[in-house]
Length: 352
Image 1 (cartoon, helix red, strand yellow):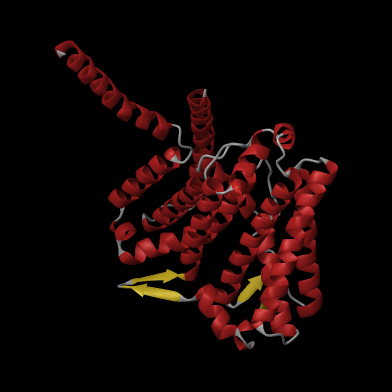
Image 2 (spheres, rainbow, N blue to C red):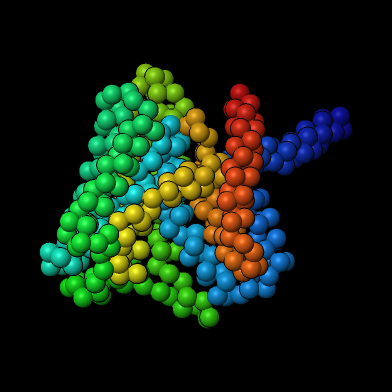
């Protein structure tokens, strides 16, 4: 009886000692872990460098900076996990805002009707990108690069044709602006901090994307098509539909960001958003996404955007030359790729 009791105690002790180890192994395999540690380091660093960083106004500023980038980074992360890229994501923010502004200001439409048309436009472009990629087998890098150039030309050409300039302004005088502005550009005062609506959109988009990725069948399809497209098709995953919906997701995020910017600043430039597509990809990579697809985290992408916002505004608060931010981006990208590859290999070993 005593021997049996000792054996039971030993087994329980072994099991209890293995539990923390198993939890640690699962934690270390999480793709967003590197981004979380990076965000902590950046936060502590700038908090020590300048008092303005932790002030209410300072926190609101770097959250505002990160919000629109974060909305796009989350959508781009989903697409990258699915094994594709969208180089038209940046210019889409300007295209949708221009469609809204031209219809509301120059055609006299209600802002909500203009927003609806610009949403349909965004979803149609996203669906076209996905359809061409799946139909032709061309790399999404090439297909969306073509879309990027086409949209940039349309933005400049149509805006100059209608307005004689490369800017559309005056939307505050359009009908429906007040209610639309409340949804996309309202501010919430929390003490001395003024939180922009884009921050709330960022939180909402991230929450929905996390639920979709980890709690739904569609989330499993995203990982499957990103990991191995032939294998995904072999087990019955609707690959074409999944990838088309992912491209439509980045276009939808572009519409949200374009609407937030337009209704907040009441104007839009035809070249707005050009070049930001690389920052979206970098934020997703920093958040744990592999460039090869099949691995990543949308929560990590949101944290990657937060790192951008903290670093960019922290440099300003510290009164350093803003050119140092590009050095920061380069080092951050290289470090993220190395860390992500290590985490992916670790996660693969744990699955086995």
